[in-house]
Length: 127
Image (cartoon, rainbow, N blue to C red; front, side, top):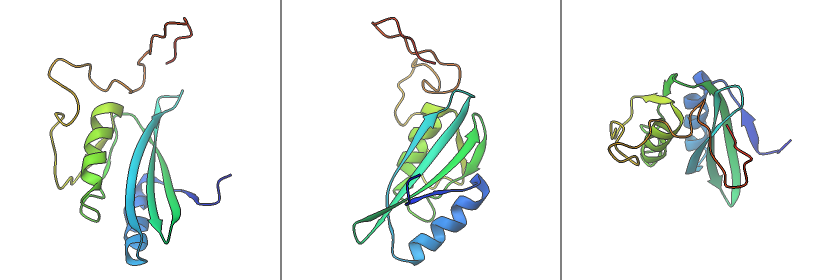
C-alpha cells in the first residue's frame, strides 16, 4: 500500500481537504479512473514541502458529490473534466462549464464512463 494514500468516503473528502489547506498543502491535481464494476475512483493530490498526499474516494457513476472548488479554485477545472469524462457530477462548482469544458458538440457523452468499450488495434478491447 502507498503510505501517502488516504482512502475516504466521498462525504468526508471536503472536510479532509479543508484540513490539508489549513496545514499548508497546495492542490496539485485530481484524476479519475473507471473500475470494472462501473464505479469511479477519484484521486485528489496535494503537496507540502515536496511530499505528496493523495486522497482517494470511490463513487458510483452518475452520483453527485461535493466540489472542492470553493476550497481550491483550481479544482474546478479538474472537476469539470472528470464530470464530462467519467459520469460523476460535482455540486457547488465555483466555475461550471455545463458539460462543455473538454468535449465538443457531438462528442460521445462520458467517454470514460461505465460501459464504454475502448477498441484497440490489437483486438484486446477494454471496457
